[in-house]
Amino acid sequence: MNFILGQKKEMVEVFLEDGRVRPATALQAGPAAVTQIKTKDKDGYDAVQIGFGLKSAKRIKKPQKGHLKKVESKNEKIKTESLRWLREFRVEKPDDFKLGDTIDASQFKEGDRVKVSAISKGKGFQGVVKRHGFAGGSRTRGQKHSEREPGSIGATWPQRILKGKRMAGRMGGRRITVKNLEILKVDPDKNLILISGAVPGRRGTLVEIVKT
Image 1: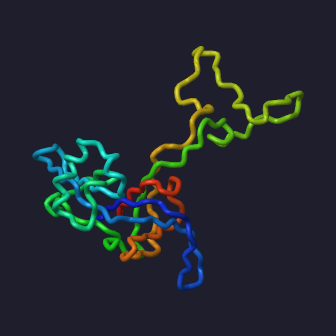
Image 2: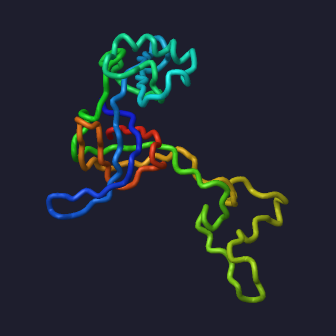
Image 3: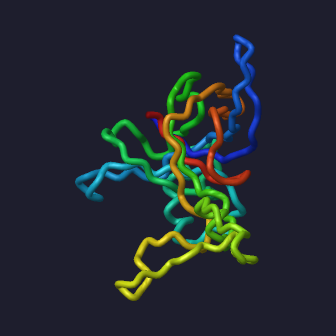
């Protein structure tokens, strides 16, 4: 198993043995439960679905309750009937997994390289200076209010705005993947993983962690 679901907690500092300080993100990684196994013969591809996190049972829809009922009797450690998130990961050998298996942070160790995916913070509608790093216009030569304007966006031909033009719009709230991050510390008892650098999203964001 080279993958797990986690939840972003906060950023911390990690002191190494040589005295250096590394910024890190603390993730609550697991425990997660295997909720479905997909095979090429039946579903067209090989994958494993795992569930993580808990929420009120009354907020789970009936189809999902029926889906998780198969796992309920096979995993005593996790309340599988109240799982909050379900995600799929492609695998080469689905036979290595069993319905109800528990996945925790113990599969990772210090020094492992991972890639993480999460939804970034939403920043609402933003202008071109914040969204794309435009310099804006100067205040010289009679200009008064063009410091943060995008400048010319049209063309002589064609008489329309070209697709892909960088303009103002909604910023953030997108799925971001950061590769080649290093695991600095692992606490299997608390299911905590400290990953070097910053991870997309706010506190409480769901994070997918895959060993590379």
